[in-house]
Length: 104
Image (cartoon, rainbow, N blue to C red; front, side, top):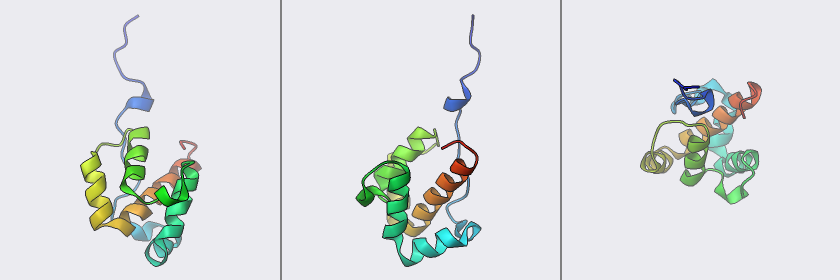
């Protein structure tokens, strides 16, 4: 039996929302800009990680790798350093959407 395509789990994926779509979910947006550590702890909790790792760039890399989202560790570092609140909000929105669709 010959396989001609990759399983869907390994097909390239993307984040569910863009980095700058903070207003797509105002509750996440407000929390991400007013108190990002709380949002980071929510992300870490969802991913069964230490609360202190929630909004760090390695967490974004782990998530991106798990869901086969294109990018690199350098991309994750730059996005997290220069657009930290937006990156944290994007990651939380993505987790929320994947949970609602049963992909998380």
